[in-house]
Amino acid sequence: MTFNLSFLSLLAVSVFLAILLFTLTYYLNPKNEDPEKLSAYECGFDPFGQSRSRFDVRFYLVSILFIIFDLEVMFLFPWSVLFISLGSFGLCVIVYFLFILTIGFFYEWASGALDWD
Image (tube, rainbow, N blue to C red; front, side, top):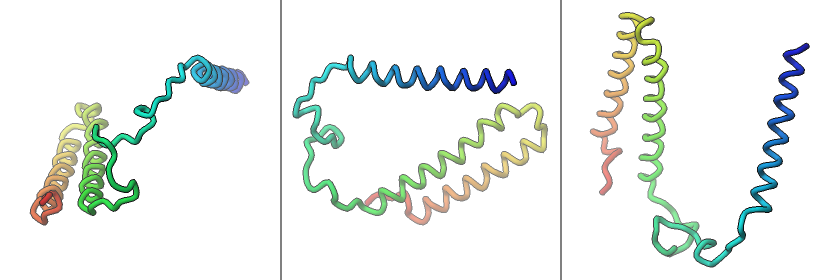
């Protein structure tokens, strides 16, 4: 029963603080709206062309490859925390994982997925 009561009180305090902070920032924030601040931002340049123009498919390919490799590298963090307790089996598993990751990277490189003409 005390767990439920402590959880509910923590939840109530969190919701109250969130609403309070959002309300305070809405009313206390200075409203300095100017055309420069409201304009679209495009890498520091003035916007040009249509906002719905098509991107090259290579842009999406490189971004997806980055996300895939970034997520795969995130698997190294839990392994590094448990490195001592895993022993030689853990080392063999991560070497195999990195080997497969390296093969995939070289395959993408050789197939031209990372080339930007």
